[in-house]
Amino acid sequence: MSKWRNAALPFLAVLMCACSDSNGTQANRIPATRVDQAVAQLDSVVNDVMTRSGIPGMAIAVVYADQVVYAKGFGVRRVGEPARIEPETVFQLASISKPLGATVVATQVAESVVSWDTPVIRHLPWFSMPDPDTTQAVTIGDLYAHRSGLPDHAGDDLEEVGHGRQSVLERLHLLPAAPLRSAYAYTNFGLTAAAESVAQASKLPWEALSEQMLYRPLGMNATSSRHADFMSRPNRASPHVRDGDQFVPGAQREPDAQSPAGGASSNVLDMAKWMQLILNEGRYEGRQIVAREALKPALEPQMLSSPANGDRPAGYYGYGFNINTSEAGHTRYSHSGAFSMGAATSVAILPAARTGIIVLTNAQPIGAAETVTAAYMDLVESGTISRDWYEAFTPVFDQLNAPVGRFAGQPFPVQPAPPRPAHAYTGAYSNAYFGDATVEAAGDNLTLKIGPAQQTFALQHWDGDTFIFEISGEVSPPGSRSAVTFTPGPGGTATEMNIEIYDEWGQGTLKRR
Image 1 (spheres, rainbow, N blue to C red):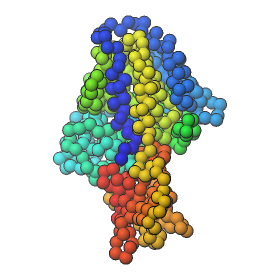
Image 2 (spheres, rainbow, N blue to C red):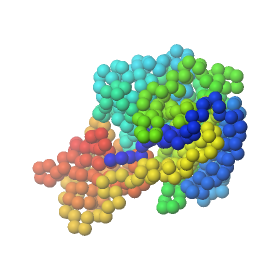
Image 3 (cartoon, rainbow, N blue to C red):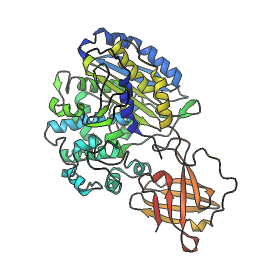
Image 4 (tube, one colour):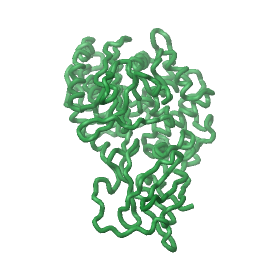
């Protein structure tokens, strides 16, 4: 079963590099006028993307040589309301929180509070991995480079049903894992464990550490790693999801549990300051905010994330950053962010041209943000846009946004086997990973409640002892369905149930208590 995967985003970063200027131009030959020419075409690029995609709003900033040379908003904050997107409008950053947070970690590396090679359990002794030896050896850097061995997106399903940060991290050891440093697998909560270890070493909560060490020194006054701060901003963008051929307001994503990986919010003016810091190797307005040697490892390849394939070069991950090399020989730092519940973001930084671009949108990910960053990088590197990027990204995002579940989109059986009486299924169930769940009857209907949030689903009979529920959230795109299959014991009473949508790592079976 596939879910929405930010793990696909390193591939997108590689795709953005794969068709750039192929004439062998060297990095030091990018003319100084290229940025001016690229910026001059951005309005046209953005208007085309907005028209073709139909997304409600977008904000963009471009930096060049210590200056913000472009900062604009397009569209509206919320469909049906007049308030316009402005450069000051605050958006959820989603996974751009990762490179932002890696910069926070670098401040603590610079102060010798931790190093990138510090074992996570040194400051987070209750954290454990599936393998005891890995528990002892896994470092902050391993988790920031997604090479810990944890499976792709480990723990996201726990967040979905209401487990908080520590509760999720305490359960990761129950999942299957690859050997340490043997494979790349993108994990929001693996990275969050590393950040939490840094926060413990610093004796500050992660949210306060980020504010004290990065946001405040840079004057990023609209930036926060607390969801409550985002919600308190009067000038903020609302999430939107696609409904047919249009976008409509969606449910608000609350990502505090994975704040270091996806919970930051900001506007493009603040993020421009951060891009300047990265381009200047830790300096901002003449002040060394982060020591160069502490930041440098984050901006170097640490793990292969996408093997070379045909004319597509290999992609790498540093510590919180995608690190790629275009065919023109230029190194790029980049990252995308995505909430399937209604946010998509993209950043790309080209040190050879001393420029970077940040794109924030208030719609579910469909490739609009990446189209703008890819087109801008093309224009800077070669003076022309190498391909129709929106057309290139569309099938990738269509696949990522496709409904999941083996019964998704299927008609109900015409002559299903009848279910057992409701009391055969009702009762309390649990397992060590998800915790408690209950199946309750209301008249002829059954409901499933699971997790600390008591997330509630109406069960519809499918066939025999199998029911389904409709699900859409961060781990399941709209239109998804999950089967719930009960296993009868002696006398016909169910002894366990299997929830398909939560069974990717073999943790979807809950036994009757």
